[in-house]
Image (cartoon, rainbow over all chains, first blue to last red):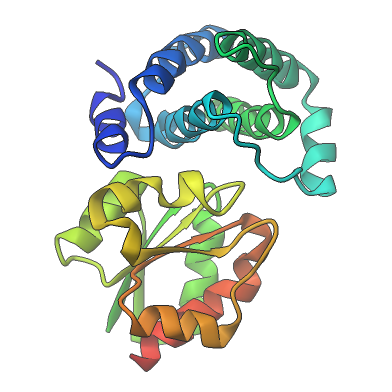
Length: 120
Length: 119
């Protein structure tokens, strides 16, 4: 299974829970659908790590600081990626009865944009 | 020769900054986050500089998993950048993995390299 070793390392080191991993797989399936291609360990592993950590934070209601304005403004220009990131994270957050924090939407947007850009 | 493994979203920028700072005293290799952590664990690299948007999670997660949290430090996050003497102290105490945000690369990577070369 894709990212299995990566997620196992993160779980074994206590950084993420099984619930976060389960949620990450759902979100990553959505990212794959958005990108229109299967994800790969080599190029998408860092995004997978970021995402599972983000979901662990969301489950724990642990919030990152607001992103720097320059990062926020850049992310906002990626309207399609922002829409995808928002939808996927809001769906995941509902599992824990929360809303997706702005910082998490911003950073996932940037990751998705980066993955889009590398393929073109 | 100090061998530095580099990973994350700003790895190419970190490679350039580290090579500029270390000259012929360092070798710098861009790797995936897992491969960079494995390189340090297996003795093929002396240190790792990872990067992600926060300087913490994605930059260091695999290093924490493979090397142990006590050997990792977020050197530059959105909220704070370690001072040179703090970086030197971390290196002296055995820290081998450093997390940085992209915006701090040009400031903090030379300081990390300098501290590693002073060991």
